[in-house]
Amino acid sequence: MAPFPTPVIYSMEALNKDLPIRQLYPEDIYPNGDYYPSPYGRVRYWIVGPEDGQKVVLIHGLSTPSILWKDVQAELVSNGFRVLMYDIYGRGYSEAPRLTCDPNLCIMQLALLMQYIGWDAADLVGFSMGGAIAASFAAMFPHLVGKNIVFLSASGLLDSVKEQPNASKETQPDSGQVAWHLRELQTQCLPGFSDMLESSKKDGLATGVNWAYRKLGKMPDKRCLIVHGIADNVVPYSEAFKIRKLVPQAQLISIEGASHFVPMEEGSKQKFTENLLKFLA
Figure (cartoon, helix red, strand yellow):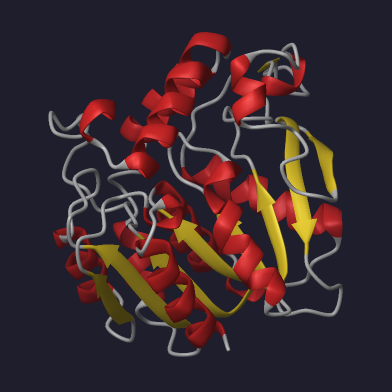
């Protein structure tokens, strides 16, 4: 029999607070943070914004944890939204279970977290791999999702996953450099991080979510928005059209000159949040 609870590898929570990684991404980066002791390891989450606000979950991507949403969440909160952010297993302050990091694990993480905090349903915003999680979650648990689902620089339909030669840290805009630096620090400091990344790439999250997007395309009650940077060299711009083909009711907004890390990129993040607020309202 498999051991229960699942064996886990420690998160940033266990690291010395003086380390550069914790200076770059502090545990209290947002107010009202806490841990959920899930069966698959401790999950760090934050809930910000007015208690009576429209509920939105922000789901980060493959390697950059919830620091990604710093500017986006501030705009949502100032416009009256109630926002949930959390670190996906094996990233940031959430422990890494010794399990495959596939759609099943990631949608269970969010479903259990919403049950824990008492949220019946919420709109979803998924970035990169978080888009694949949002699609899978909505396809499997439509009753836990409000009307609105946003796919930002979303993956899930890639033919294969390989590091792009032009996607190195040195060639990224400032936003990408922060993300890649944090990725390097997590690789150095968190023994479970690299395994979770590799599993995410090969076990269906990056390439195998066709079923979820297709199912969403048959849910006319769900409003979907696809936002993608034309200059994205991590998840190519062409992926947006693949998603649109499967989810024909989705609106597509292209951001001229935007790279992959739209939520952290000056100019691009403003265009995104403007369209996001309009869509959610």
